[in-house]
Length: 306
Image (cartoon, rainbow, N blue to C red; front, side, top):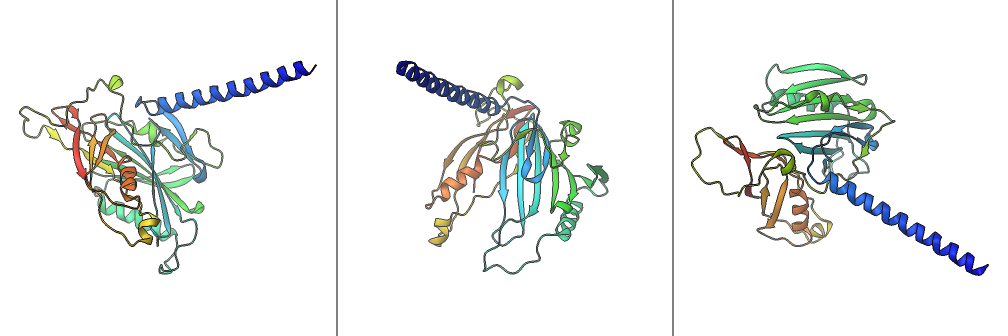
């Protein structure tokens, strides 16, 4: 009888270990697929803000909130087929600001109005229109390389922005991205959480791109080249240890912007202590850009950034 009980315990433990092993393998497989660069439109969600929409890949997450600001900004962005797709959620800051900050005016309708006026000034004159999404008012703005859709959700103390960035010779599928936006308390899709570890470029196999050397040789005809265009350049976080030691400075990094739209190798040119170099690298991995193009072909470039 005791032997049977021991056997049952052994089988039970074996089953648990086997189940854990299967889950780990499945997680690795999902991660590998999401970081492979293959374009696969899927629905993603941010449950905290009641927002979901389709992205061609898992986006990176860029957080931004100043120490004395009342607005918290979360930006979710990805690159696919020479187009950058971006979701921005601007909401009321969580938690109190430091005591040394001025009282401030809080977060409210005026902030939303200021943002609309900013876009009116910075985009093409007259190129704006109104729309409704999930019963909420929205405004579309057309810029030189980016189109903006701004949705008023101030009843929930936030507003939503969608961006599509591309060159004039590229035609994005606006409908698939913009019309997929859903805003509700009950959402379906893949939770983004912290997002991808870095900006994911397209698969060379899928788009037929061979990664050329950053040093392009041969004669280049006039007006046949487009420089790489930086869509989002995250700011590096200032570490608490650096703040305690009153240490400031600039980290310079050599970054490879790949022809596929992904971030390649990152090499520090200058170093800083207290974790500041690591924070700079962390931010550089999440730069979103449109690759350089020479005579119709995307090419990789290496550039020093600060």
